[in-house]
Amino acid sequence: MYYIGVDYHKHYSYVVVKNGQGEVERRGAILNSKEQVRQFLEPYRPGKAALEATRNWGLIYDWLEEILDDVALAHPLRTRAIAEARIKTDKISADILADLLRADLLPRAYVPGRETREIKNILRQRMFFVRLQTMVKNRIHTILDRHPEVLSEAQELSDLFGATGMEWLKQVTLSGEDDQLLTSELELLELLKKKISESNDVVKELSKQDKRARLLRSIPGIGPFFSMLILYEIDDINRFQDPKKLCSYAGLVPSTHASGGRVYHGRITKQGNKWLRWALIEAVYPAIRADAELYAYYERIRLRKGANAAKVATARRLLTIVYRVLSQGRFYQRRRQDSPVALVTS
Image 1 (tube, rainbow, N blue to C red):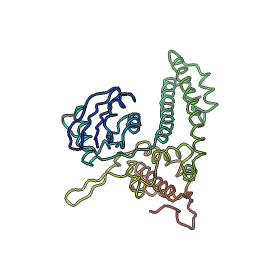
Image 2 (cartoon, helix red, strand yellow; image 1 turned 90 degrees about the vertical axis):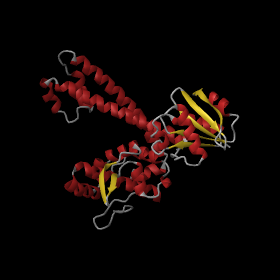
Image 3 (cartoon, rainbow, N blue to C red; image 1 turned 120 degrees about the vertical axis):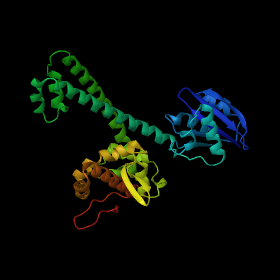
Image 4 (cartoon, helix red, strand yellow; image 1 turned 90 degrees about the horizontal axis):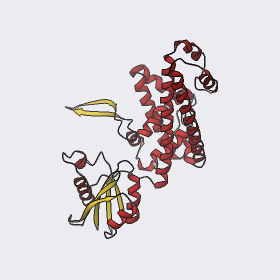
C-alpha cells in the first residue's frame, strides 16, 4: 500500500508518495490537471491519499478518488502538526499528511458527495448576491444622505427599494456627481435583483423535489431558501450524535475555559460552518414573529442577558428543532397553549 500526501495550491500541487515503511518513492510538484495527477500517481496503486480542506479542494479530491483506493480530507484545525509548525513548506506539509495517513492518525473532515457540493455552490452564490445587494442599498442610502432636500421625500416611502420606491429613485435628480453615481448604483441593484430572482427559481425547484426540505419549511422562520441551505450544509444528519454536536458544528456553542476548578463560559466559538450559523441567526426574527413559544423564549433571555445573547440562544434552539425534525423525519408541530412543544426538549 502506498501513502500519498498532497499539498494543494491554486496552480500546482506538491505530492509525495511513501511506501508502508515510510520511505519516499517519489516526490515533486505537478500542475493541477487531471491528466498530470493521473500520470504521476498511476504506478502507485493500491494507494491512499490525504489532502487538507482548503479552498476548492473538491477539484483535486475528485481526481484522486478516480485513481486511488481511498482519499482522506484532513481537518485543517485538527492537523496541528502542520498548523503549528514554525517551518512550513510544501514538502513538509505533504510529508506530514502522508505520515499521518500511514500511521492512521489523520484527523478526517467530512466529505459531502459531488452533487451536494454542487448544490451548495449554487446556494452560496445566492448568498453572495444578497450580500452585494445589501452593500449597494447601503451605498444608495449614503448618497441620499448627502442631499437633505430629497431625504424628506424618501422617508415618506414605506419601502425605498420596492416598486414605488425604485420608480422614485429613477426619477429623482441630485446635484453634482451624485446623480451619475446614483444611476450607476441603481443599474447594479437591478442586475443583482435579477440574479437573485433567477437563483430563487432554481432553489424553489430543488426544494420541491426534496422531502426533507418540506419538513424544514414547517419550522418558523425557515422558508424555501433557508430550508435548502440548512439541509445541504448539514448533509447527513446521522453524522451528529445529538443536537449539541450539531450546534457545535455550527459554532453556536459558548467557548469554555476551565482553570483552578472554575469553569468560564464566553462568547460563541464561531468555529465551524459559518453558512449554517448565518442562516440560523438570520432566521431568528422571522421565527419569533411567527411562533409564540419561540418569542417567549427569546424575551426571557433578552431580559436577563440582552438582545444579542437572546438571538444566539434562539438560533441554537432553532437548530435543535432542525435536528429533531430531520432525525425523526417529522414535521414541526407548533406549541398549543395547553400542550408542550413537540420535538424539542429544553
